[in-house]
Amino acid sequence: MAGKIIADTLEHSTAGSLDTSYVVQGSAKVYHSANDAGTVLNGSLNVSSLTDTSSGQQTVNLSASTADTNYSVIAGSGNKDSGNARVMLIQGVTSSSYVSSAYSTFSSTFSDTPQCSILQGNLA
Amino acid sequence: MSEIKVDNLTGKTSAGSITVTSEGGAATQSLQQGLAKSWLNLNGTGTIAARDSLNISSIVDHSSGRYGPVLNSAMSNTNYSLTGTSNLNPGDTFSAPGNIIIGSNNVIATTTSTYEASNYVTSYVDSKYVFTQVFGDLA
Image (cartoon, rainbow over all chains, first blue to last red; front, side):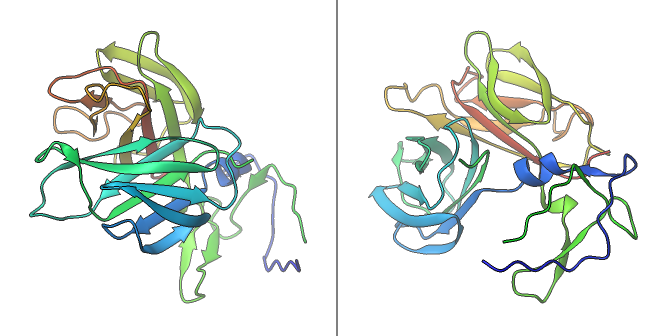
């Protein structure tokens, strides 16, 4: 792959500098945004496919695997059914996939809703 | 493929700002502000412990289900963004994971160096998996 860098300068400095560990470890490794049925991936990074596991549960399959399963995933749900509250959970964590799940506190079941998630951690 | 090996990145015009061009080429954004400044995967049961983290020096066990991650490098102010989610693994009881509540007493960020993340179901309950992420400006 050809590389191209356009920059004025790269400096090593102790004043006002940003340790490059933040660039590596602070960059999101995965994000996904999907419809309520878990069948349409609206936007994503490092996602090979999305599986509609069951009602309210979407399996996010990664293109590049993580180094381990100790990563951090946050998730949010969209508005559906008059905004009934949903608790977002991350389940079935592996180095190549995780399950984003929306639990309705109104119906006490996992329930379809648009979902998004962001993964921070280390790639393999 | 080109590769740059460097320990620190510093802006030329402004030391704390490096501008990157958007994927579509129509916008620019600060590299620093788009990076997570901290993230955490916490075992919040028993003797609590981070499984992995970025910029976390220690975690205070305030009380059942209430945790106080302490940042290694502090934020520049208390206006940073906090988010959190629970995990539920096969075999876990559903009673444990709940809403991860960020902050306390109507305040999101407690100080520039620590915050509170709580797992709440119908009361504060320890959770085996607590995920949090922090975006904002480092001091």
